[in-house]
Image 1 (cartoon, helix red, strand yellow):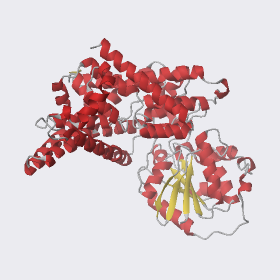
Image 2 (cartoon, one colour; image 1 turned 180 degrees about the vertical axis):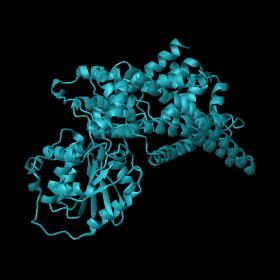
Image 3 (cartoon, one colour; image 1 turned 45 degrees about the vertical axis):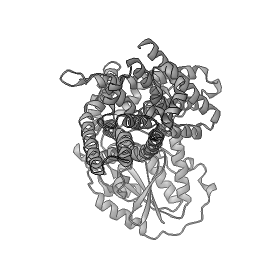
Image 4 (spheres, one colour; image 1 turned 90 degrees about the horizontal axis):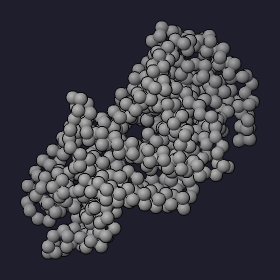
Length: 613
């Protein structure tokens, strides 16, 4: 299949343009390094490839290395029918530096090229007009003005792109891979000088575009006000998970309870009814109740990404993170890890310093990912009363939730500090921290809402099958032998009593021990496993009300806090361990990390159970 490649600098609307051309809802984020891997989609009869964003063919970072490497391969590929170079109309000079380099390469490799002058709506909002035809004549390449956000000019752009891609190519001399060496250095005209002249002639003045942005940044990047704003934003982020998600969670719980009663009522008593009650609605249903919180978390983080605030947060965090042996770029993987550790570990590739990159990857598991969210939400609802302050703005359970996330972050920083002071001197080859601040923008709601829905689907698809299998195993072991005299004397009870001495110092019995061991497959399994266990014990109780069942069972406050601290620190995700092994290349290092975090988690749980009681 013939291919069209899409290139451009970061924060220029390139990924959103890719979404509009292919119909895919790829993640759009206003910070460098988000598109480290290639994204592909179907555009008419062509394969459209979204390349990682880069500022120049002369690379400075790992993500730019990947982009240039893939671009060179595409230039040598006969299937590359067209190069679309995305330009930010509000920052024409910086976009054209890379654009003019790409144009020179396209001519050398006999590839057709089209400039997509994106964000034209932003320029017109300031009353500025860009003569597209004159610009095209000066650069010697077709230029199309459009807005991927408002869809202005998209239809005409699609027609122009397809016409160019389908047009025959004039044969040129054969090229080989050796000819791509020192490409940037061989560019006949200095692209910086060329882009500066073109931007002065056609572009909008930066002072006009940045006037509002600079006024906001004067507050957001101030040492005092910016730090306060950052802490407030982070607090509201985790506070909102409880405040906004609670009505949705109640709705899901009530719906599951009603469905369970309706189905089991039609079936009547028996083994099938017990299985549906205990394993399906008790185990899997207890897990589904917390899906709304995943959606709220994704929505809030998406708003911060798309608005342009995350780049500011990375800049604010650079100085304090440097003290712990990290950089501002570590903030982005850290925040991403609150959704999932796996892409966060991969995002750490963009950190230039090998030492800081390794430390960031090794401490990312201490960030509380969405898999731990059901565990936190369940135990917090059991241990912390539902009290609200300031007219409902502050929820006591939300404060506890924020405290757990903050504890994970502080633990990661402490571990980073220790690792940075023990790293080999040979690894301390750092590069300066450089970060472009994108323009403040309103989010594009359609991809954002789609991203929220997809996060829920992926969470269910990833964890649902595991929880179902675990619930089935636990139910089978706990149900048989049916004449044993109850759960405690079942096969599961016998296994639980065997491992119980390991968990007795933590103030919990064998049921919680079974759930904790099972959750090493995936942390979410803890909720499903407990749901099944308590369902078997109390089949007549409210099926979806696992928190109420645990409260009636009398879980000690100190033991509950101990379990929470255990889950903050323990590395209990097989997929994360595998990703760390792939990224670090060291089995010994990763196994040592699992053992170290596990021992620390056990110690914290023991201290909580002993000291709090």
